Image (cartoon, rainbow, N blue to C red):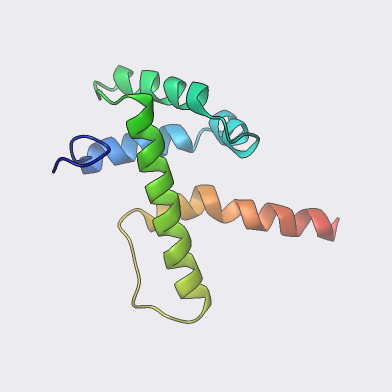
Length: 109
């Protein structure tokens, strides 16, 4: 599948991307910036260690797409719909689910 992000991501490639993304250090860097080319260059370099050849643009595109899909599934679930789902929802929920929870717990303290 040739699209803007290059060749189609395999399940293993997405898992590896999510594993790197779940690194607290990477998450903190991503939360604090919009100009994130440098961060995705690090992500691409770490994927290379797993033998996965992706450039920083492909990583950023996949990250954005996963995040977008997660948010749309999450908001559907929050409104009571169970028809929407996605493959890596639980993995992403472990990473992204805390973002809103973190803000909520800050206001509790």
